Length: 226
Length: 226
DNA sequence: ATAGTGAGTTAACATTGGGTTAATATGAAA
DNA sequence: TTTCATATTAACCCAATGTTAACTCACTAT
Image (cartoon, rainbow over the protein chains, first blue to last red):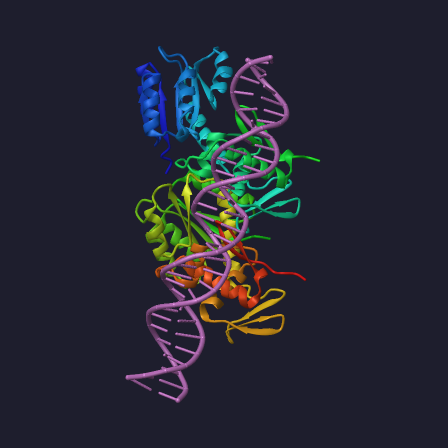
């Protein structure tokens, strides 16, 4: 049952129809939007797994739309790919910056598109895999301890969850918002410094080098070699 | 060698392929089935240690299939876990009733799946022979006493069961929910402090050091050395 | 029956340490 | 420099847990 949800965004209705028809036939749940504004609305409601976004659109272009979409936390795991005319290579750079995962060049060859979509969706589900073990550190949920180079370190709940989150994707930066959302929960509100203090305590216990601050963005876990 | 046998059942061939590939790579012996009927046939022949069963399938759904499978005595020790789309929470209840041991939500995160599988299989083999003895403590179900460094300590039922549970997996944290569920039973409801009081009495009798509290999480049994 | 006994539970209050905040320092970027 | 984000420290708060004693209930001995 591969009922992944796909949102198509393009100002050319013919292309929308063509793609919608073919993708629906393939078993996907498809919604469409004719412009960036509409796309954002639909995306927030539909929560698609994949968004195919034309770069060249009047009013709000794909890049900008992409940026807007990325602001919605619910869409954090959504894959965004750009549709771009062959040759417009600049879009790659700008697109990746805006948070795109891939791009597809026009003219569209359905076969290529389908395999690309399939690949993207699969990769997404694999990439979502949680890592709870790196070379020198391992988290053990059953025992509720962290094992660092053989020695067990027991951590209080929040510190434990925080470390687990950061470790889940080494080298990935987690924004403060993301951290709050997963460790504390979307609803409850705590001061801004709270997170720093927990980072502090963690660093105290596991060593400063493991958690790196990315100013203005967030924190990341890095494997320290030695 | 962890050559446990796993049967995968899902009507989506892509998922089957993905999982089969990965699980085989992990060293498991894998068989697959595309529908419930086929699953039952294969299960009776293959006698897997673990069956992963999609809830949503045409014709015979996962719940029904599970029920059928449970009828085969040879498969009494087989663990069955359901695959369910996130949000279909009802499946938990219905699933457990049908004899499922666990459930996994889609989208599937391979790492999570693997650790879950590992955990389930290990637990299954552990549960077959529960640890009821550590270096300095041994529980004797016949006499209903605990022998601590040679001296017998007799405990009332609840305290005994509580200690037995904690000892069954030294260093493992047991949540209050888990403790209630196994020592008291899922249905009956008792106040929150009850458990503390029993812990207290236990500590009084066997010494404070054996039971450690992990605030916000639960309790664990630790072997004290000296 | 009556009283005694002990397990299990609850109620009331005490304590603790995890979590938070406030206040201040530091340091990087503009 | 000035500014803004993060670091650091210590003090504070409170929910989770600890503790004690009383209460209920089943069972037993008198």
